[in-house]
Length: 383
Ligand SMILES: [Zn+2]
Image 1 (cartoon, rainbow, N blue to C red):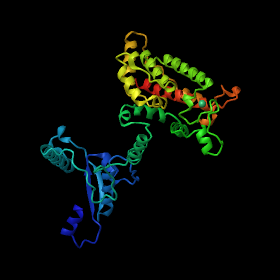
Image 2 (image 1 turned 30 degrees about the vertical axis):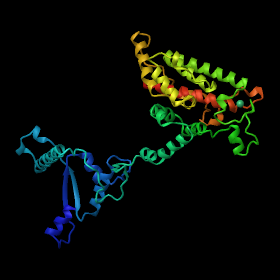
Image 3 (image 1 turned 90 degrees about the horizontal axis):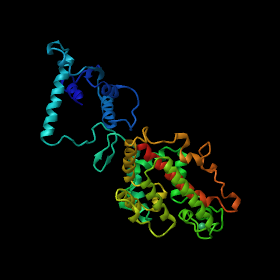
Image 4 (image 1 turned 135 degrees about the vertical axis):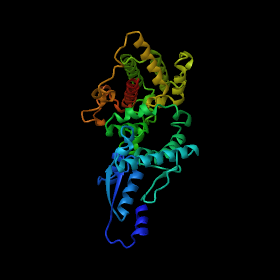
């Protein structure tokens, strides 16, 4: 814009396209502004770089960018510097003065308005996004509605949302193949092969549980009162307990988690009276998240530091010197129920096949407990 103005002021009748040399001590900045590579909206400073490129394309001159080394006065006499190097020092000084001005006026974090050559801009809560993060935008669009659904269906309360270790849950989820991620998500919202959805899909005429005859949805599966379901639940909880021992889970944490799991099948709430004072805040947080939340992998964030403390303790005793044992990625807990191609339909759940009852009822809570293992594994890795 300044060059355009200068041209009109000084050479309004100039017929040739003039050339202008420009220098900058930021090599990557000058490369980003002038190179031909297409910009991605996810690039850092996308708003600024794209606006500069647009300004360059609109300007009536041919630009010749070059790099100039900065701060050369620290190792050279000023008179020995080139004209560009001296000018670079000059504008650096002006920039420092301007920063001090802003500092004095408490305006060090200036507003980020839409630039005059910025073709499009996204503002979120009055803040312009300098780059477009797909995760951030997805959250902005979907999270408010998702939260509303959670509240409407009493799945995740406002209080428990803040207690959940979302980071660990995210890492566990991202460690799975995309197909399995979708499958797990569907299970936790109940969209799986239980009676309710079999009727909905037109596969069955009755939604009755094949074990006990009650209405079968995904919440019924781990709570089925049938003896065979109870036996399988006990077997799986025992397996989880052993797995936690093998992975050096703090005995107090294991006790608390198994106690909370009992609450899934026993409607009388687990009591915190049997929980040590150290563990109690995490126990209460997990209790607020709920037994179903625990089954669905929403572990409280307080467990991480407690497990870390336990590792520190046994490390100081010399029993544990090399960090927590971590399963190799190809033998993750969920890998044990996945086929080679990772598709959920290859689950090898045949323990009930000889009992003339459907496998589906046990698959649900087996998946729950193995998913819980996978998430706890991510906690152990983070310790
Ligand atoms: Zn049942």
